Image: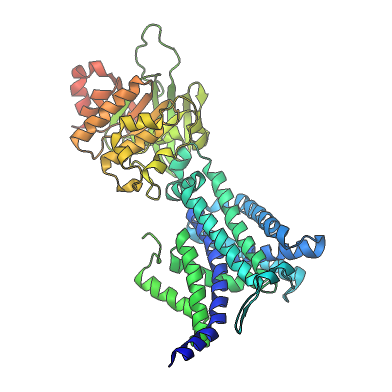
Length: 296
Length: 247
């Protein structure tokens, strides 16, 4: 194969790989929220997909009912859905901390089913369209035959920025040090005078807000429909397991990496692209049960 | 036992003790670990809790801090009732706790560990003063907390609660598992912080260490305080203590 052929192949592969990386941005954002929640609350938040979907729906409702556009929604929807998360934590999840992880998982799984059911009843299961703001056309990327809509460029920028910012807050700030310490020994941190129950509530709210933020980002790309989160979340849980439960950097890197690998598989052998993540998960579980970045 | 063993009051001393524990009971789930503990600590004193393994010494400190399950009885600190308060509010009232396993955080470096407990009142030591007390910590400021030696971790665990302005320190076996020379350093440090006006309630198994730092000793057995010995009466009470502690 000559150099020219190789370049041609690469050019053909590029769109799929980039699409994969954009999916990866969503994996990263969602698994990041899951990691933050799991680290602090020891709860495997199965409602994460539903909260992602709620983010998209709130953005759509803000536009359809109140005429509030994309930019304010990017801030408002996470706040609104985050507040719903805070209420869920206070009213339900906080009662399960003394029990096995399994109970938190079952509760949040149940919540996810209820929330998705409510949205399906109200809005039906066909999707709602949410058009991206026109200004993103300025970001359109054209490289030869390859065309990347500006909105997807924005998704990459926004997701990476939020991931990095979250990492910085957790690893480099005082509040982050409380969070890391409370992840290790919540009782002792509380005995130092820090209101750990409040911290847990706010952490859950923040994790949920991250999911909702991802939902708003996703709204113009995928149609806004009740099952949009459920489709994503299974893969995201595989990402979390591969990265290492509770590892912040692990979930970010693994999210992008697996999106990229999925895209690559789409080029090499498309039927395998939905499966590849789970094959990797199985291999990681067999060789490094704590995950690639997890502390055993 | 309902009554509290108290020290004879020096003339002119404040009549209300800084910490007054009466008839304290505590549970971990179903298991009843404290059966009516009574003790007092006065402002500026260093008091130890002696006793065998399982006598309830650590549980007493944890119960004062609100870290056990259900509690009953009374814990008055500077006149305020602590039973029924959450641990963070007990800490904010001015009590600081250094656990037996030291509780150094692996995901925090030495400086972050040192700066973790929030300042709850003025009057704590400055970071410079803590570094003067424990020069090793300054050299290892950027190390991961759990990469320190056992002695350094103990210094870090005590150092970080001196910053907060807490007036009563609960120290759980600071000498445990440390080399004799480090134990001496810790002893010297406790005498220094006493001079700076801190009040200390100390759990100890190491009786020789306890007598170099403390004003008084309480002896615990089966979840109760059963005896009290002033440090100056220690020599005369040796036989009694040997029997309690089985040494």
